[in-house]
Amino acid sequence: MKKTNYIQEQIIVNLAKSLLYEKALVKLDGQFVGARAAIARISQNVHSETDLNYGEIFIRDNVPVMIYLLIDGQYEIVQNFLNICLQLQSTEFQTKGIFPISFIDVNNQLIADYGQRAIGRICSVDATLWWPILAYFYVQRTGDQAWAIKTEVQIGLQRFLELILHPQFRDAPTLYVPDGAFMIDRPMDVWGNPLEIQVLLYASLISSVSLIKMDLEDKNSTQSNAFRDFQYHQFNYATVWLKRLKRYLLTHYWVNNKTIQVLRRRPTEQYGESITNEYNIQTETIPHWLQDWLGNQGGYLIGNVRTGRPDFRFFTLGNCLGAIFDIISPVQQRSLFTLFLRNRHSLFAQMPLRICHPPLESQDWRLITGFDRKNLPWCYHNAGHWPCLLWFFVLAILRYQNRYGDLSIDGSDSFELLLEESYQVLLERLPQQKWAEYFDGPTGIWIGQQARNYQTWTIAGFLLVHHFLKVNPADSSIMNLPNLNQILQSKPQI
Ligand code: GLC
Image: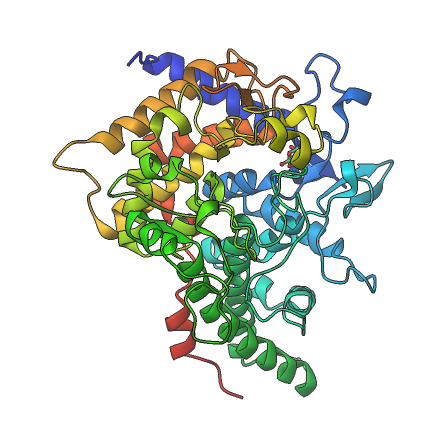
């Protein structure tokens, strides 16, 4: 492994910090409120037509930024960001409760995009789910419960929960969404119940109930009785939902060598309540590449569960979050990490990490993506490589080690090596290749055909990898969620 020397490393880290703090962060009324998605061509410092909406502040792209700012003690900026998003939470009849995909200040006026301006008019559900999660991380890290129990914050949570917990046609506890409702925001056959949305749903519900509990326990709360009754009602409903959701994800999404063999031999066309093949899935939908992908020890959460149409593709972010949010057990987390290691040549290759695997090709690409040239096989969302994903994996591994102990297999330090080598790749390539947004090709060696340069989450993601590996691994607890059983044991009483 080629290693960058210490002085060189410090220069790169300082460069990344100055890009983040001096170029990416945006001020509103004299205060920093979040970071733009990509820094405009440095010399001009203005966004041109071809920059599209990359000058805007995306909630999704600000996740690594906010986590880094929390770690760096910049609490005020995180609070400003949360407050602005809250101010922009929709109150329109049809979209009440959603948070915007992105927003921008144009001549002192905030303009938000809820999907009505986005390419393809996609709606981004993940942004809405991230808000309560980030709010919880902020309160947990700063201890700022006074913010959590503010009426505006509690009303925001109520609106959010009303959006999720309402009568619907389906009985399943998953959230049903259209295509492209998260980081993969173009048609990629990720409609229905994509994994990333479901793990974020879990985290957003548990974060919301924790924040509501703080308010219910606050003796000085000035809320009316009707308001409190509604809080109890939502609290109770959300905790029941959470239990069902976790059980559902473990039953329907988790696969390993053993479960696949059971799935392959299930009968079809079953009717009634006590059956084994609820979604009437045919054996032929189970792809053969799984045999080698899983090996004997590997396991992961599949991409989507739908009637007759499960999606066995591997989605990196949904799986990392499944581990970070403890949706999968420590034993399952170990199998997931083993699967990452086993498929290192695919997932890490020359630029960690690949966003999903395998790509949609030929006729599938034509029909499913609608001839989307940005999503050609091995490009962009369609199995391209995104350096902004590595920190999630690093955090998942380190928090596992902190909580459950050593991960080494037969005494070998394969995981340490994997992390160190991946970090060295970022160090060597990112500054040289202008902190590009994504990389194309089966090994991720080419800069993405339409990638922006100086993409903020590439920069913030690098800073997080550096922080967790070289500065303070214990900070990998920053995304720990409260434990549902503990919340229920000390359930607030009316
Ligand atoms: C692209 C990505 C999306 C990201 C946005 C801004 O649309 O697909 O995930 O949030 O760019 O960087």
